[in-house]
Image (cartoon, rainbow, N blue to C red; front, side):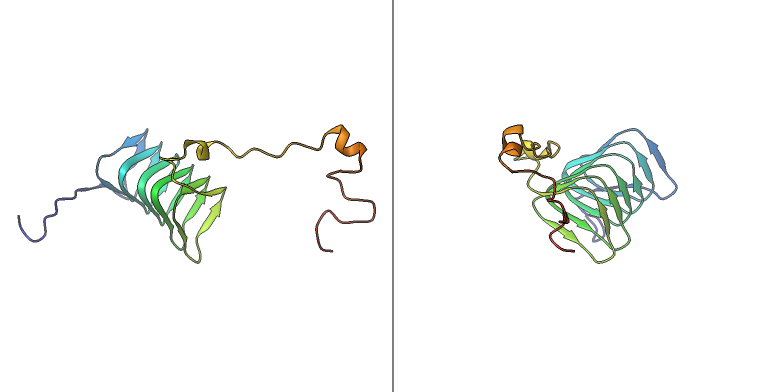
Length: 150
């Protein structure tokens, strides 16, 4: 084997490539173009420099581009400056660099070991009529702000 060859292969979706549909990979993957579908490489690393409109699942996810979907990593997620993620993020380790944009829920858990962590977060139940009758209410008292400061 020559010095420039590696035993670990990396697939690439080039900057001029547009993929319509899901992508499943058994090797590391670099997304430089646009994928309109879910991308999965469960035991490998996915690097997104382009755009993905769908969910991402991998061992390690490095995002420097745009993702519109949920992100699941069994080891770690790195959000680099200039990236934009619109969706939930689930991973045991998360690094968010200055300048990264994230709009969604974050759960620090291993999605492979904790399937319940993938369920959407539930909102707390409103107070019961009995609690309201006893003076407990979610509404602020008259003359008070709902926020802890004015």
